[in-house]
Length: 111
Length: 114
Image 1 (cartoon, each protein chain N blue to C red):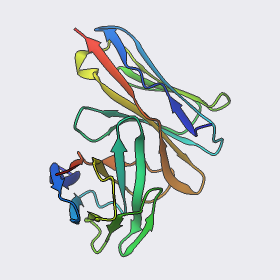
Image 2 (cartoon, rainbow over the protein chains, first blue to last red; image 1 turned 60 degrees about the horizontal axis):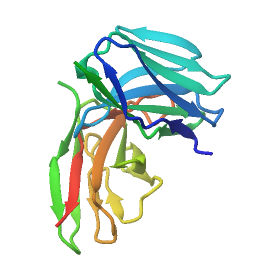
Image 3 (cartoon, chains in turn green, cyan; image 1 turned 180 degrees about the horizontal axis):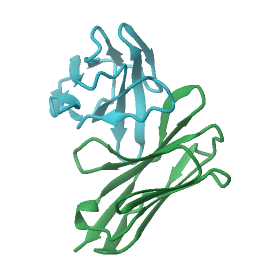
Image 4 (tube, chains in turn green, purple; image 1 turned 30 degrees about the vertical axis):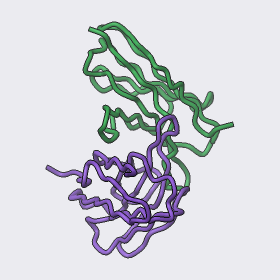
């Protein structure tokens, strides 16, 4: 079983839709959870950072962590064409600095 | 503006040639990292450095070398021993090399073989 699983998509939605992106993980030592957005030919940009179970909201983005189920989600409300990108989940924990990434989900928001 | 600058954006390597990718940060971060990104494979860690004059191998260090002589600079050399170097290379940094510190990325260098 891979440490982090992320559906690669592609995911295509109409403008204004609510988007749900998900990752599951197997390592119970993971305590810190991140979502990155990566545009084509660019580096990943940190969108959300959480370290506890529950929800964290930032504008149109909500990050959700369920440690009991080892499941994290990123919700995008009122999606825009500018949200079209690859979304990467990443996590770390314990004494290990190392970030473990999902493979990314390619999202297209159609005008 | 603070950030991470990678250069060049595109690089071509000939057979048997070593090439060096530059990474400079002005965020005053102690820790720096190099990743390789291949389609469908996600990000894989090549090398990391938690402090000046110290660095450790990541998951796929073979065929690569690094140095960390200055806090703001962490160049990566892709040697001729790396048989499949075509990839997108990403440099990152964090305040410290701790698991609770998110990493911030540069815009990458795309390396191709001539």
